[in-house]
Amino acid sequence: MTNDELWQSLPEDLREEFDALVGEGRNIQAIHVLREKSGRTPPPSIREGVALLDHRARLLNPELA
Image (cartoon, rainbow, N blue to C red; front, side, top):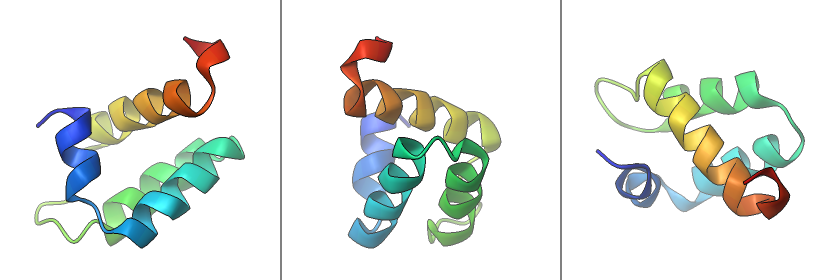
């Protein structure tokens, strides 16, 4: 599953919470929330969470790219 596919599969409230945590630099909490609230079984792997976190951080802060 690509980052975009994973992102689109998440509930809107989770996407907002994830972006807020990423924006605050609370990366571990963002991955924890992603895994706990995704509604997926099995939940996204830590590797998927880190990849999504990196992707979203670049989109939210283009200076990181």
